[in-house]
Image (cartoon, rainbow, N blue to C red; front, side, top):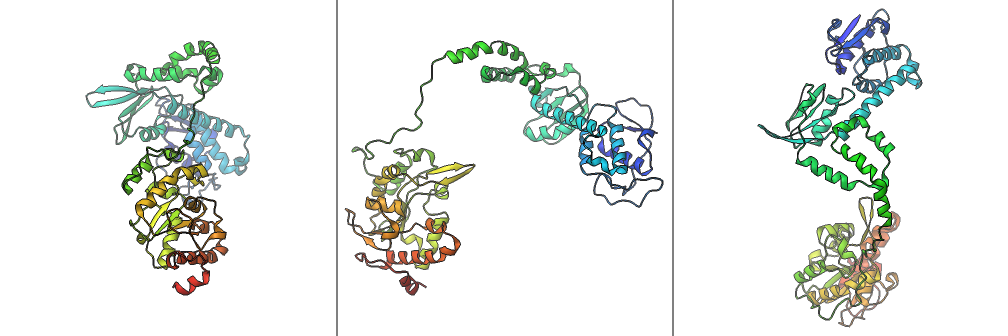
Amino acid sequence: MRVRLQDPVDLDAFRREARQLLANGVPPDHVEWSDGTQGSGGAELFGDAPAGGLGLFSDEPAAPPAPAGAARQPVPASFLALCADVILHRDPGRLALMYRLLWRLAHEPSLRHDPLDADMLRAGLMAKAVRRDIHKMRAFVRFTRVEGEQGERHVAWFEPDHRIVEANAPFFSRRFAQMQWAILTPERCVAWDGQALTFRDGADRRERPPPDAGEQLWLTYYENIFNPARLKLAMMRREMPVRYWHNLPEAALIQPLADAAQARSQSMIDAPATPARRIRAPLPLHLLPADRAAPASLDELRAVTHACRDCPIGALATQAVCGEGPVGAQRMLVGEQPGDQEDLAGRPFVGPAGQLLDRAMAQLGRPRDTVYLANAVKHFKYELRGKRRIHKTAAQREAEACAHWLDSEIALVQPRALVALGATAARALLGRPVAVQAERGAWLHERADGRPVFVTLHPSALLRLPDAERAAAYDSWLADLYGAFESPLGDSGRIQPAAARVLVP
């Protein structure tokens, strides 16, 4: 029996023919396969398979058992993927090999577990060669710009080892979706007009477009990125086989660059050492020079803090984050520094810690817009972990570099009292180390400007606690905040948590 495929890479047609042959019990040695590239002899024995089929290649429902030796054992799903690669191979015996494997998988189920079978090994090598050819086409296609009646197009000439043009075309349509292009090969050509792919018969090598200005630019770039110290010709020839060189414009540079590699490497060794460049300048000895005028308004303060480079943090953050709230507010709440979300939004206390603070203030009947919210450090300090920016506590010198900005902010807002949220804020406001747990919940009168400072936890400290401890800690912190808003400014006694539970709904 002779079976001829009109299209040599039509996997669906092969599946129909092979399924029908298998259902009729035709063994592999009774079938002679051919395709459209092997002459016109023979006729197609079978038409389209009837609906249903044996379900050997997919999840289609199996038809009733076929008589006379029809196969009933389904083949593994991986066989279809193998066939999708093998059918692109140029070997004329590939169709016979695929049908022979199908027959054997249906009648010898143990074959799927035999990695050393000669037929399976041969098919695997064919599939590997096809996949390698697909990769090489993606790597070695070089487009040339061509001006024509229909405008600008980019045309490339390539000579694949196997019939991979149609299988590889969707990759190029995605990769170069915004330009019109064509890839010419001796057997099959493909073009993209920005909307759809079209295919035609092969082209003559004489249709290859001449070099354009972009080719010389590419050669200049290739020559300048060539590193003679990393030259490995054997590895290069394995990754860029010599058979592709005649279609690569940069191939003409390879041998001259390789010949000069030894001399260039020696010149690099003999060259004097490059002086090390300081990446970060040291902090200035005078953090607030005498000629630096204090900002006259909050808007001016935001502008000058954004441009501040007294410490390295400013160069790495997205923007400076100054405070917000009414001028003349009764209380100014000062945190440590902006976090990731604050850095992106340019506003203080908008992340998880800010949301917890908003919740507590709502319980106390103190909306956010009645207080002024600020931070001791105006830029976000972080370290990268993958794509995430993880908060990192500001060092003492970095906090000191921001101290004059905080003082300017206090002078412009003129709050009646200050609330320090956390140790960094407390140190910035009091000018000394502060043990928050020991000194929380009381008014401290140590500032030269006479403003009392109330010390409590930063809301982020509660977020880091285990779930079992968070409720009690929140109640205690809520009591602190109640004292910060309701207790007399001269009261130095600590506020007890029970007081908040009684007075706060």
